[in-house]
Amino acid sequence: MAVRRRGRLPDEVRAAAVRAGMAFAFTVFTFVVALFASWAHTGLLTPALALMALGVFLLAWCLIDVVVSRQVVASRRRAPNSAAPLEGSREHRNGGRHR
Image 1 (tube, rainbow, N blue to C red):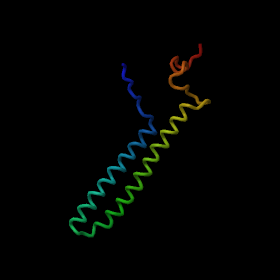
Image 2: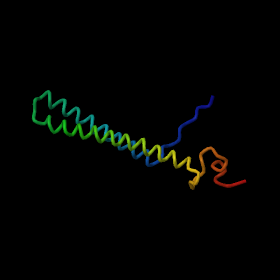
Image 3: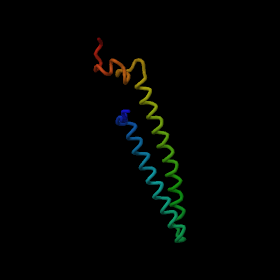
Image 4: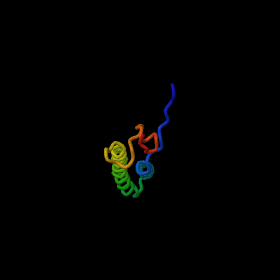
């Protein structure tokens, strides 16, 4: 049985995924800062918690962006009047030439 490799993600989906990864890293970092601030009983806890809440909101926004950009790319591939032919079609395999 042949294993089919997934193709490379489109640029807009990849960019959205990178933004989501950065938002996740920011949220984890602020969580660690808030955890250490709570253990040390410092005044840094309140700003760290506020930044962590902002990070959670940003992460949710970025994940929604990934889902929407994937749907846009999928609908572009399925569009009947799109400039590019559907993947797997005869036109796609022949480079857009008709027989």
